[in-house]
Amino acid sequence: MSNEIPIKEISELLDEIGKKAPKLIGGVIEALFSAEAGQKMGRAVGVYYI
Image (cartoon, rainbow, N blue to C red; front, side, top):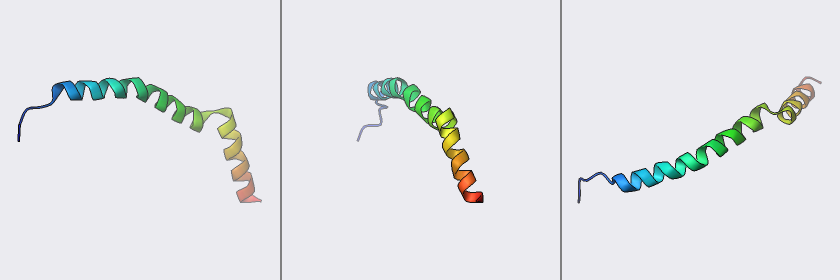
């Protein structure tokens, strides 16, 4: 068993995360704060109180 830190593999992993994370985060924010999401939440609240 080697105690060496796999720097190359960690670097490659972080590069991939850096490429994919902004798109993922943007999609989550859009899903939560878009006008369409707001309308759906408003309808759901309205149905709950009727």
